[in-house]
Length: 162
Image 1 (tube, rainbow, N blue to C red):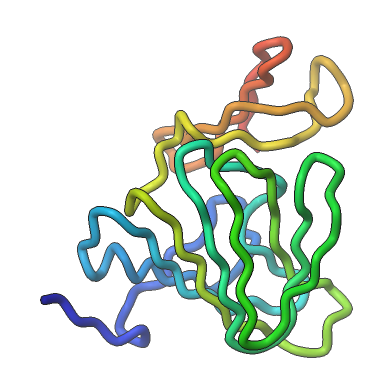
Image 2: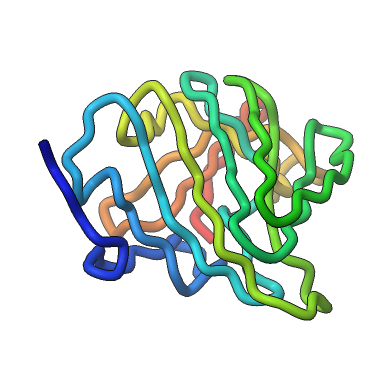
């Protein structure tokens, strides 16, 4: 058995600086088959750096307090998830969650992914502006040795790190 208090888990944030408090609880517990991250998001903060999908992992977000807006699919349909509600995204389903900048309250939420306690970077795709093709395109997503994201356009092969 492993046990940890969320207050004792170190803060590890997104390399793109899109939030201030993310606590990888699964890392502290040493899990192998599930990822659990605790978030405190201020207005304007996001869970991740943008619209993305995990081809090998489903994700569940549980909102304890506050309200989160999710963009779902390539058409970015907006879905609002409020206190004590949860939403699930299937493997391969594009999504992005954020707190609107004009929100009145902070959000406390959990992100849970399975299978796997860590991301397989070869299985993550993001939708970002391609500097070569122009317009939003699907990019393979990786992590550089400097712990920065690297995006590679699946259309033209151009890579960049923001």
